[in-house]
Length: 176
Image (cartoon, rainbow, N blue to C red; front, side, top):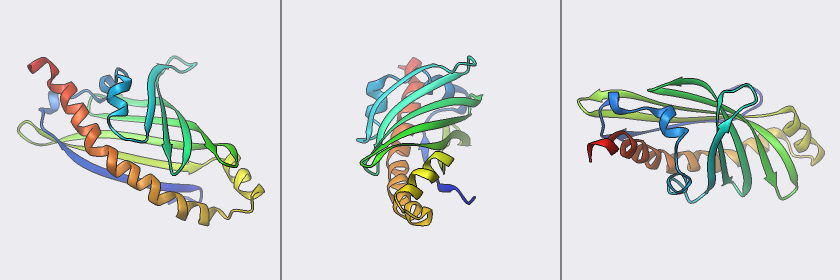
């Protein structure tokens, strides 16, 4: 863990679909808001657009640990079986607004005929802005990290099987 890393959380779940039918970037960048909201009670809204440089971007709004987050996930790797997104996210806390850097990584690997293992990994890092925000309030970073980790980890753990089910539905939608 780096000095400014808050969390590195990874969970897996099974997808009952052939790997050739799974396209994580397509799923992510066409995910209906109702489907996103169904993957966690903390999810509020989702949409997609492009970053100023033309790369695809997923906009997610959720509440984690009592703080409203607006995430601007820009695609940095977009293979059918592996998607990496980076976001300098806005965080709205009871004591003000700051930012956090989040790397969201989704991947699948085949584990048998018609079966894949989905991995949902989230890593977050305090930005310089966040470090100053905490310092102005007299909050030691280690204390903040210790308090933030359980909420972030629980959120990831809860949404992983629901994301897997959503990706499975998307992969199999033409089979119905």
